Length: 389
Image (cartoon, rainbow, N blue to C red; front, side, top):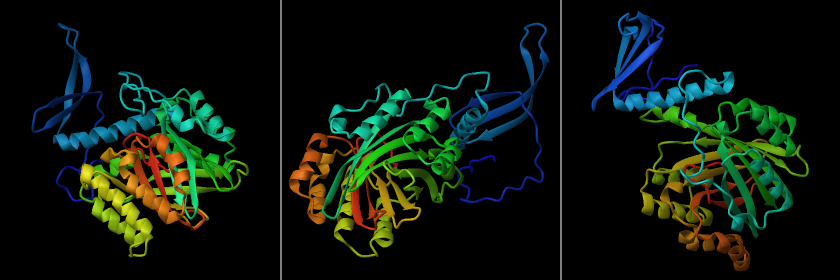
């Protein structure tokens, strides 16, 4: 199915009338540009100049677009070509640029020893499998608090999907971790459309859990291109989570992004959808964290997600605040308030916090977890734009 970018100034929705359209096949194209417009000429090779041996191209169509429309078209075409090559194999002709590692340009991503020195054996096994893929993986870590509980051993490694040429290697990793056949089939079905793959591990009150996520970031780019005025909600992440000891116990999480919301709109949506329209301590803490990010980066640079899982009461929000470039230590008052609210001892909190206090803060999540408990989680250490949980 073809995607198309709406031109600048059109309404969010348009009815396309193709009754008078003609179809021409082009063997060649040429591009010219100035400050105001970009011109795409399409044509067919009809012969060769006998004097110079240069091919002769007969121009059949010329399309003039604004630079903003050309940018959206380029993003959609790049997605279409990449998707084609993933499904059908590499195309000939000019090579596409090599995939860029998920980490910051020019810096090989690595896992800081301070973040993994206490990693449990199952987490070490997962890290070994990710290392075995030979990818540049970015580590994101988190801790979760709910009543009288702090869970600090939560790790997530993310990398670009096309960094692994053979999708069978990703499926083999899922199988090694005990992912059920049902989940493997769903993971396989979504893999071709994914931009980024994440593998994760977390300890919980009764044991440990593995995770695998697919990120569909291009869907957000397309939604913004086609509905510039009011992008609709988009399913961006699909998460598969299963018990490390009993892999048949698992759930599928769906993360829907609501693009276009300002920070005040995110806070109000959070209040209405997850806290019954009233203030609560958890809400106040999350609101204070968002306010701190707004002070640093303004109200329009963040993303808001809502999450549900199959067969359990989870209903939560996730606000990605990486663009604020805050460090965990800048949120120390809010983190201490989390401890007081959930009854977590200062000693236990500081044992988890002190080694990572200078780490880049990422996002805050809250609401009801899969056990129906009020919770807050803090994610940190990943790169800008990283948002899955």
